[in-house]
Length: 287
Length: 287
Image (cartoon, rainbow over all chains, first blue to last red; front, side, top):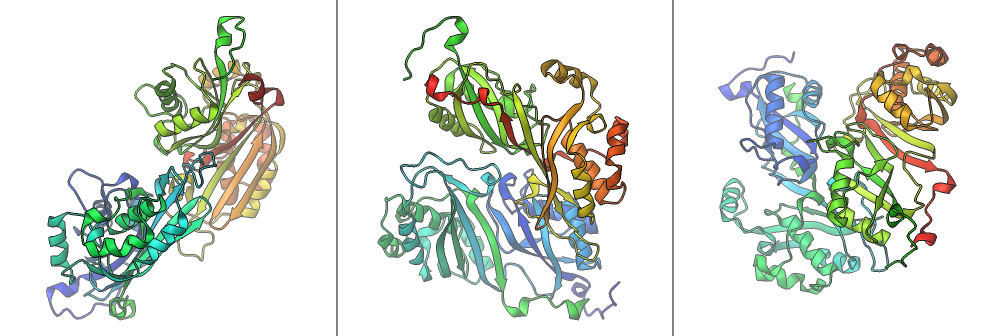
């Protein structure tokens, strides 16, 4: 049992927690809890209730869409029950389906919230190239990889896609790559400090490894569907429907219609969320 | 279109096909078709019907159980419609769920049947070691691997398991490792030329690779649940409940109760089925 700490107000009896999660999003209707549908947030809330008997709604760093995966989603929540971090992690993993795993659990400063203080997020999107060149018979994607990739059936000009991706690095208005969902947009803006569609991408690159072509992008933040729209646009470049040199024009258009289509969800994984140092674990102080 | 060949009787108008399949068995009630349940055989029959309008029940080299996977299941069937092998493969893969893939399709000698003339079968069973030693904090299995491994929560003596596995090599009566299902046994014996539980294992070995411990076994044939019972027994050895030197005694007992428990299905994959040369593709002759 940890030592009792002086209680100055009601909220100090709750401890703030940070969890790092991995999940296979295939069989879930996304992160956000929805009545009657399997969700990551709902499954986690239910597992937390089983372990602690507490009703909490864990907050993710962002809401991954239906079918989107995570290998490093960060979650914040507050619990009254004192429990050693390793015990909470083990207990949650015993209850959660094996498609959702708690990779890390730790006690953090009380002000930590998974959606605030985000320095960067990193996503990866993976295509399986069923037909890298016109001369090649279709390559079959193993069922071992099927849930994690977009199986793309035609040759792509990978060099052109690499050039296109480079042009997204920097600070831009990404309106052309944001889903047209005004209601969600207003709600997200109210929650964040970003009043517009300007974001900074620190890196944006395609890598070819065997039959898989992966896009990895790290940025200050991402608009709804932004990674999938960047991917869909790069694929349009690879397929010869747009030139890599047109990316600047598409950004300047600030019009969703100017960019390519939204790539399907199964290729996308949230890899990492980075926070400012003041939000890091202060286990020593608290436990 | 292939040249018409002289028709000597009604059956010669059908062409014999050999397919090689990979599947993620997690969401299927096994290979064998069952009313109202998703099965591999049923899904394949339905895809063949969509492509060819022919009602056929494809025959597998064996019936994998619910939750068991394959990376090289072999299937035989006969079709009336003339179709180039690559076209059949592509068309089936367009219709099948991505959890089932046709890796190869070819026209073979009319006498080919996937359950006959089998020289050997190779299976792999994979454990994910959540806790390789007592000193180590539990290692979390990524959701990327969760459908393909048995997550084992305690330390195992891998060297002892390797010794136990070696002792299965050779020709033995494997009654102690066969499921007690008399009805199925009688049916299988009626179909095969093996009137008893004697089988020959050509190789049987454990390999440790990172956090995964895999058992690969190649043999003349396998009784129902035999690989999973060999694995369960080796795990009993690894956990210190049986000695590696007791394997001979267990074989001699010819009693299912003498061996260890049946390992769960999700770690098991059928890797390869090898046939005698007379059963190989004779594409040149036929197409």
